[in-house]
Image (tube, rainbow over all chains, first blue to last red; front, side, top):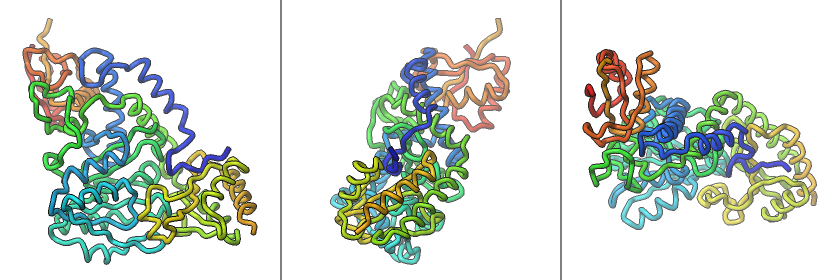
Length: 382
Length: 73
């Protein structure tokens, strides 16, 4: 079997991830931060260590400004619903995932002004087009670091500068890039970084988070949920201290332990090494697909300008048929359809049919890419 | 037996951060349940040797760990 659906969730995970989850359940089973006994402290220590690992990975100076959430979607919702109010203005791109578009459409119904900057057919953003709609009164720019269909990498730093010139903040959706494309919260001027734990950070599903930059006054960000934090328990008001303000209820301790192990794996393997591996595989995949008549590849063909998620269509074939044949005849696992991102498919011209998407990971081999290309040759044969 | 001290925090995360920087500075410190006579801000507090109170304060300040209080006990 060849697993090429890593843009949905990475598989396999490094063995140390499962080991860390088991170790948490067997050895650190207390409720982190709720009690003062040895097992509670052991659990809290594991959560804190992961917080620190996240802060280091993204060059954020303060681990207490790392908020753990269920996933990137939850982190994005926290920011959008936490700062956008009726009459407020938000600018985003036409290559956002539904994790951004659905909460924005809901906020639009509540009176938030949503402006969407069209990207080109490869998924690239023209900064001048964005500059025209960002105006005083814009409170937030939301930008995917790389979309999940064409993998096109967008320029975070100039967009952050544009936001700050207009007095706005910037939220970056790093679901597709965290762990493989370098992210520097301080250096790039990121105010909110939403990340997922279960893709290129190789942690388990159900993990992710939000890194809050130092420009943000967290007191102006409303929590999505309020409740017990193990702190300031004499008050019935939510504390303002970070990370507790945004982390009510018992956290996903085993998941966070696994995420910590995933991040340590990424760091020990070397993010630059992982990226180089994926760039090489993506280049090999695209070059091979270019040679198959009837196959159309979306997004930039240069692997350096994109992530490893490669979308394609085959002339005369439904994408669902291609996916099914890959699975049944070749045991190659892809993802077909709209990838929860109708906006991206409209932008690249593949709505509503969608595309077939291949997404290798650090564990994918060149041989597996070649086998996939041979399968595509057979499928695309008229 | 020498007097002990306790550092109080607003969050568990701050307590863990404090423990880490204190141990890294080779000072003695241990996380304990917060003594009830002080505060219920956060369930855990950092116990240390009161004779090292100045060093403890200095290390925590340098690392910019926010404290809720520091007391002998």
